[in-house]
Image (tube, rainbow, N blue to C red):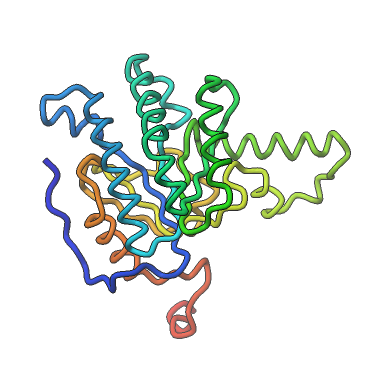
Amino acid sequence: MSPPMETLDYPGEAPDGLHVAIIMDGNGRWAKARGLPRSLGHRAGVAALRRTVEGARELGVNRLTVFGFSTENWRRPREEVSELLRLLRAYFHSDLGRLEREGVRVRIVGRRTGLEPDILEMIRDAEARTASNSRFHLQVAFNYGGRADIVDAARAFAAAVERGEANAYDLDEAAFASRLSTAGSPPPDLIIRTGFERRLSNFLLWDCAYAELVFQDIYWPDYGPEQLRAAIAEYLTRERRFGGVQPHDIRAAV
């Protein structure tokens, strides 16, 4: 069982434009602790995702990115991969219409090469149907890896050079970021990881340069608005400097 979360004072609404990213970890261990198959842990994780998306919107979060399936997850047993893909299909089948009506824009980030045709069609349909929405942004990192995204962006720039569309001196951070699968999305302000682990696991490696990290000791299937509220409250205690110092810190820094 996950322990109760410690909550901090929280004013009730996140700062305008807050981008929260979540590594949803612990489905399998949640199921194991209850003597259940891992598949039931993943199903409970989908329910937690629904709760958290709703909670994020109510808490004032503008953008939520969740780590749905990594480039490394293909190494898992075939039965588990099939169940994860089935749950992805089921989630969009059951929830896309509601998300579309409620003004949620859905975007999938990650590699698309090699995906099954019906998965590709589902991704395109979700993005096309919600393209004009702007009340809330839900990004799902699927077949995503931070290193893979960086490699793909480097290849894309190299290909542009080969075609004569760019030269090496054109490469700066903005040009590189524009070739990532996350291009056009602001970087996350806050990255949350559940599941009692303390690592990023190849998630948003370029994008997370100045993100605040909050690790929560709870398995993902037990997650919801209360835990998200606690994480945002912790974020609000942080002083973000982006590599600089605040005026009152200058004396202490020298």
